[in-house]
Length: 336
Ligand code: NAD
Ligand code: WQD
Image (cartoon, rainbow, N blue to C red):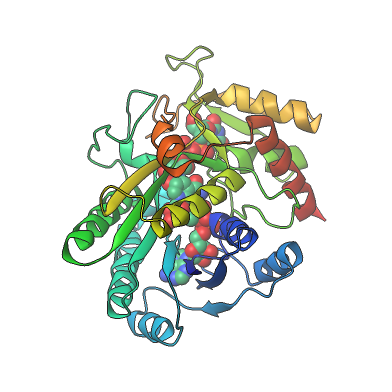
């Protein structure tokens, strides 16, 4: 099968390209380099030995996107990563997020329909659950989103579900919990632009000396050590889940045309546990301070993963220490 990967040079997209090739799929990637670099293609070649077929396409440009898909015969399925993902920026600039994340997805769906491509795997997020009672399963209620970014994920899921009713489209939406870590080669990983918002890149950048200290956002939450709890999942485990989702579509295993799965480990870790795990694998003492709570943070969230285990036949294989070790190796490689 030939798989089109949108956002293919991004953090999760690049790791997924590696796993798709490993599993024997043919891949073609597109990206507009809004949040990634062409050098990722060189790294992908080093890892896989393959020159990844690639085109610089902006999914907001409907005409260009349609022309590209029409001119690329044999696409069987799409994995759609391309989107903006900074929660704070989405609050400051919601239209950017609605245009790119929602508008871009609509453009893609039009292009797929016109070319009779009927299988798509979509990047959704645990953010759709807001503050929920963990372990959170796929039937948990979807409250009003607490950011425009989160809303774009909710809306895209609805757009995709509606399109399955109106066409032959088959959809798997994957709700990622907290993707972290990097490829074991330390050739690809997360490339946060500017000051990172997320915990793990902030930890590694502090340890390497790019940041003076990490602020732990609150230690007075109703959790065992007072800090927030999240389900940190290795990016390679996430990538492998996309291969399982493609196989699930290929084998026509879905009970309905729209399926949704949580991608998590099923285990929650606190901010302090994440720091301790990093210190253990890196052998470095992290400079951190306890600060005030961050507005909008949920207290604790981790996944119930049974649906993905049972229906996709997929389970995480990498633990928190492996996540932290690979994130640290990636930061060390970047420093070189
Ligand atoms: P990323 O920013 O590293 O990758 C996204 C890629 O899409 C980037 O390479 C970017 O340049 C590209 N892109 C953005 N807009 C585009 C456009 N208009 N046309 C073409 N390419 C475009 O982010 P990521 O962490 O790899 O996230 C991938 C997907 O997973 C996103 O949809 C994100 O919302 C979702 N997601 C991410 C997380 C996370 O914490 N990383 C969690 C849940 C869901
Ligand atoms: C994790 C924990 C912070 C930074 C975000 C998005 C979500 C999804 C995943 C895309 C929290 C604490 C963090 C720091 C800290 N992305 N923290 N000091 O907020 O769970 O989820 O990424 O869909 O939509 O919101 O991830 O890594 O920012 O935070 O104490 O400097 O680390 O308070 O408890 P979050 P995160």
